[in-house]
Image (tube, rainbow over all chains, first blue to last red; front, side, top):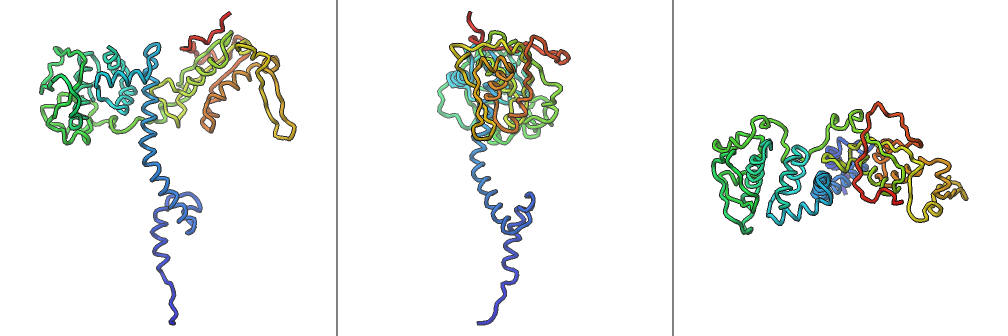
Length: 117
Length: 248
């Protein structure tokens, strides 16, 4: 059999991978074996967290709305607000309600006073 | 919803217009009274009672998911009166969740609260304190940023517990070496270091981690009735729990 050197095949493959990891810290952007491992972990985290992102933001909106609504009066809470929203068929979602709560709190109070009735 | 909500009538037009523009293409199944969106609202004369809000297809319904209210060039001419000019080039508040900038959580501008612990039930008091320190009563609550206030507790040695906890509640600590566990009752700890009781209770209610440990430093507990923070002008801590005061 003739002798075959492997040449640049492996280097080409690893260059693509290390381009992905070029902003990582320390050895994670310098050592080839570590680079492949860290790239895999990064992609796995990104995949899992794309779904988590939707959950996390909804949690944050709910917590923010709850914080403002509880200041409205005794025993008024996020759960009652959502119940009233559904009862009056108001379609504002939690994201918009949370942004309203931050930017213009009186507006949220007025909305909730209207839907209580 | 770029209209600044300055009046009640403006509220209805703004909130109804925002949701209609946001959801015009989706809600086909909700039965409703027909309240058609007029091309022109006379704002002062408008006083619609809140009822069922309906969807109506608007002229720009196809684009409504991508139209942010700030970009006025995408809004047709006859609808432009709905949008405030002043917000037109600002940050997009409807598609990005608010995150605090550095100037939103400067320590020197945070509120200070003072609370007198005399005859208050330990756990209920600690719970309210932890909520205020963490910032969970604020609309700007963010789990990764310290948005909470500072809390001063005075008369810490007079805090009350119900039942037989005075003699039966145990505080344990371990030095790390074998046989190094020390157990104290509530009474003994109150004789020795009364501030530690409230600190222990609040620390258990704050998150455990780097941010939690930083939050704990915002709690200041003192034994007697005075505290050295008069310069911060602390306000009375509003406690919403009805059962925090010990019944005599």
